[in-house]
Structures are given as C-alpha cells and as structure tokens.
Length: 139
Image (cartoon, rainbow, N blue to C red; front, top):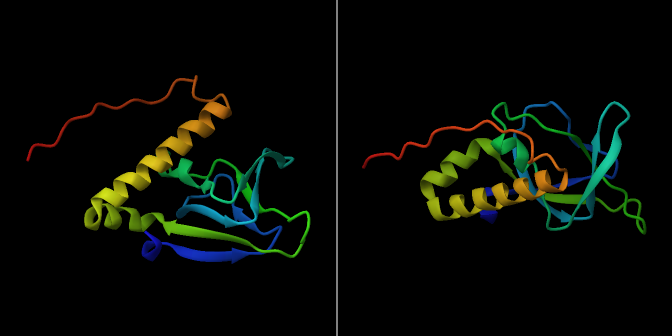
C-alpha cells in the first residue's frame, strides 16, 4: 500500500482540508496531530493523532465533499514540528481495487469502519441515511 500513497509534510497552522470542498484524497496521520474545526467560528470539534485516518468520510459522501476544516496542530513541546501524512489520491482508488482487490477491499473496510465510528461518536448515525438496493453482479 505504501507504493500507492504519498508522504506529505505540512507546517503547524496550515489548512489541510476545507469544509465543503471536493475531496481529492484520504490518508493517515503519520506524525503530530490535526485539529478538526467546524462552523463559522471554526470551533475545534476534534483532533486526529498519529495513526488516525483522515478524509474517509468524503469517500462515502455522494458529492465527495469535506465535512469540516482540518488544520495541522501545533505540537505543545515543539511548535515548529511539522505534521506528516500518508495520503492516497481518491482517483487512484479504482485502480487499486482493480489491480490489488484484496488490499483495496481492506482499505475500504478501514475507511468504512472509521467513518462509522466517527459518526457514532458525533451521534449522527441515528439520523436517517439514504439507502440503496444491492444487486449482485452475474459472472
């Protein structure tokens, strides 16, 4: 999976994701932390730390839009310490699933599980969600 991802480094305070913007990637926090901000006053509603998945909710959003602003957090000990993330461009997800179906499936499972857990934490899962009818493909 590492060959499909890109390691990026951002400075504390840099905007990583903008609420309402079309998503182009998802990834994992490798170093430091990210603050999740919401609303017109940009209230901090959460923090993502090393090992946490970021951007997975947009993978399952029909419009693929970001749900919140995300900025690189300042390290309390070293204010200059950069944040590092390993990201997967979403336009490569189909290719990954075609060439490495097992890895692609496991990655989607991680994204789905993380998304469900975040929605449960935010108490949003109790609201009605759009459903679809599953039709198995004939081979």
